[in-house]
Length: 97
Length: 117
Image (cartoon, rainbow over all chains, first blue to last red; front, side, top):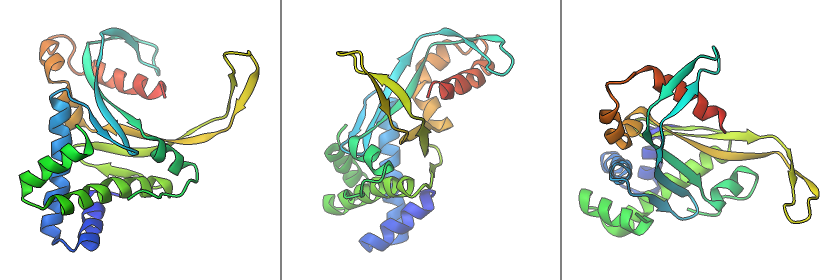
């Protein structure tokens, strides 16, 4: 599934035009990205949370060659899935949305 | 940022009622759960991708009693940030360390990151 499929679903479900549906989906994604860029977490109940985490510099190793390589300190996005999301992966009915 | 705040922001940004905006937000995240539940993956360019990962069963231990318990195999949702998002959040450290080995560590860190899961 890609962004276009989601946009189509939104248009069908809401009756919004495809142009407006696309605008809305893009705005949601861009707002989440902008929030994370500021270092703020995005918490969506039941779905999960996106958080920026700082990782210290460390010595990494190429798992294929065994070669050591320095990994500089960086910020990464961590997604923690919500309870409902996890349960839906293991057969629980998707009762949300 | 909570869902209510997200709805508020998006609603103002694109001039759509809060009610409609909330519906769109629900459909976006609901459809992602639906897609993964049926074994599909979701790729959102610039943001990232959602996939299902299988966890094998493993022997756990009850930390209180020390009894060994089998945890069943299960599936878990997994999100991998896309290149654009990765670079957006890493802006500070990227500029601070751009002089030292800019490309190679990315490759290595990508693969070790995956191995951790």
